Amino acid sequence: MHEVVIAPSILASDFSRMREEIKRAEDAGADWLHMDVMDGHFVDNISFGPAFVGAARKCACVPLDVHLMVERPDHYVPRFVDSAANITVHVEAKHHVAKTLLNIRHAGRTAGLALNPHTPFEEVVPHLAKIDLLLVMTVVPGFGGQSFMPETLSKIAAAAAYRREHGLNFRIEVDGGINAHTAPLCAERGADTFVVGTSSFGASDMHAALETMRAAITAK
Ligand code: DX5
Ligand code: ZN
Image (cartoon, rainbow, N blue to C red; front, side, top):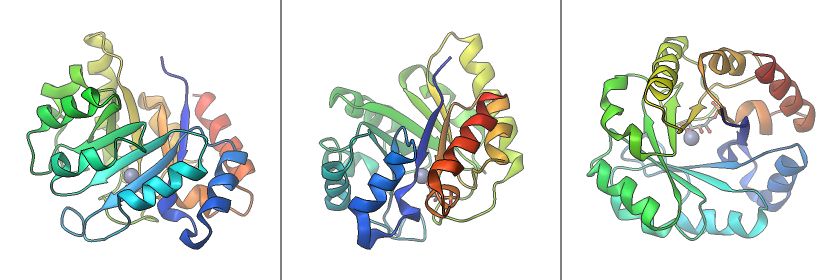
């Protein structure tokens, strides 16, 4: 069993005050910071790139969890290896998935694999023995502030069952619409890593928000 990790998503922060926002998240108890890189092709939004993540690295004490929502993650992974602790790529993107995952590990970083809500669990199965983290998207990626999709819960349960049955050790991360109500539903199915955008940076008291969420998760 993994320790619970709560990773506030920088996408929901005030970019004009990056240093203060990162400090606010760390003071509130963030274990990791989640960074959503979007290229306007793989998803219908453009967020930020390697220079921004590098700047965050200079301000942050906790590990950076970089989520690449880009069409060609194989091409861009090398640009994030200096600043990221974990790099997650999508199974639906245009690349040789196994090779990209191996390259991330060869660079000394942990490798994550993400799947969208409409992608069947079977698509990631061939890679599960070679990843450190499985990211189950709980919204269609591209934008923060969307509502959690309850139909993704069965995928979390399938991933946890597979992990148990095959003696594997990857983390199960959930991302999209996670809050004190939906996080425990995911924890109950086996999620251990929680990305929180709106419900963390959007809270007036982020420390209280994360404490409430952590208590609700660990009660499961
Ligand atoms: C969605 C992103 C998420 C997003 C989560 O495309 O991958 O990481 O920042 O934001 P909330 O928690 O607001 O749904
Ligand atoms: Zn994300």
